[in-house]
Length: 245
Image (cartoon, rainbow, N blue to C red; front, side, top):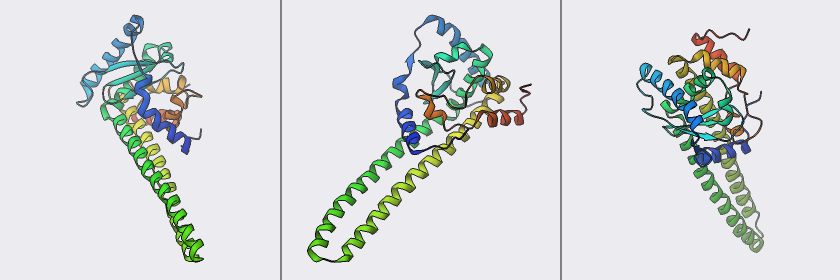
């Protein structure tokens, strides 16, 4: 599957990274708490036994999405989807271990900073474009009055520079964010392996989790992830005894 991040995906990803907290709701249903909270605590206990940098506690929130998935927010928030609850406890443990890895490494905080920085710089580039429009109008009036081709050349050069800066910045942000998020996925997978949930994670990646959700708010986020075959292969290289057959 092609995981190239286009401009629209990048913009949607930035919006999602900054607005996920609004979509995530507190878990109120007792049966969901009874199912999920002990699993989260079990993974946390295993993490504390094997690492020194995991969060002390985790808040669990829920997203109403049929795709079985979970994602981390900030440093202590873990969001699960409705679809995740349809999986077995072992499969859920594998996904939770991966997401707690993101929390432990602070990946989502870094992504929020990158997204916020991209929006700020994009705003600056917009100001440059507005300045170019004003500059073009002024130069156009001078060119009409003086009948000089020099003003046209200056305007064209300024337009080319502003367009090139905008294009280069968008490309740089897309490539850097995509590379960063892919590397973070492998690090979180390795974290799950280190605390004892590598086999569960490999199984759920290979059998239950699609590479990219077909629709919904998660589609833009997961379009940046490595394909599941590569992630499973990396886990196997670490020593996970998983086999599809």
